Length: 277
Image (cartoon, rainbow, N blue to C red; front, side, top):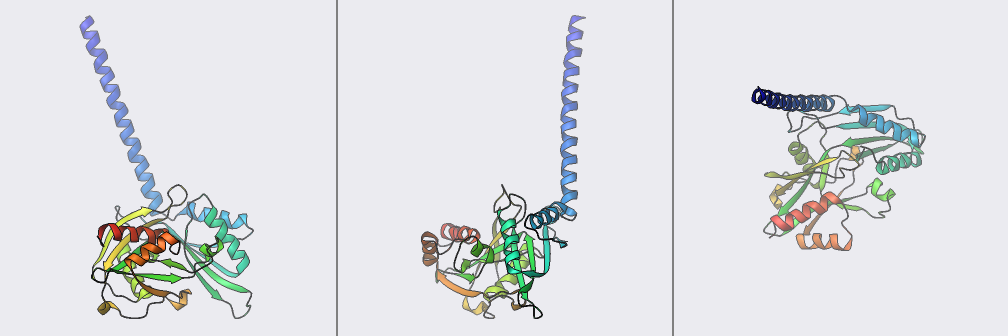
């Protein structure tokens, strides 16, 4: 009888442990289902955060439009939001950008389009886009060169960078796959129609503060792939200078502070380690 009691007690403990494991599995499944549902839906938290950032500096932000593109993870959507700010003056726009950039929330401004108004020179129509993006480093192995872009970046200027920013070509996904988007950005920004575009990694740029994730690509280029002067899209307010630099010069610019953009530094370091060896 004593042995049967011990065996029964052991069996009950084993069954209880199995029950706990089952409960844990079902709980994790429910959490995953809830996460997938949130990612497929409109990014409500992101919209709320942008609205709160505007309210903190006295700006009412009403026109916010969720966008999204399927990612590589089972049809989940990349979160992004387009924010339209009609008839806003530049000082108030600057305060909103500073509020978004310094917040410890989930917002990262990836694109700014400003259109001046003919009816009132003191006001502009502004569009901000926040979300995920892709970046690309074209390289020429034989010539040991890379192609970068130089342009004005308002958030960097507001943060104290009193110069044009030297960057890798990059752009918001805008409802496209990362590879398709970065091919289009290469044509728009630097004027190259690239053939073999290769993804090398992806990374959260500041995971403790923002949801921004970049997809990083490299592609070999040669002069025959040049289809235009690049320079970006005039209707988006882009005015981009195309730079062809030796890999040695580009790496030196990191050391002396002329290149301070994180995505560009990451791609150049990758090229130094894995391409120009």
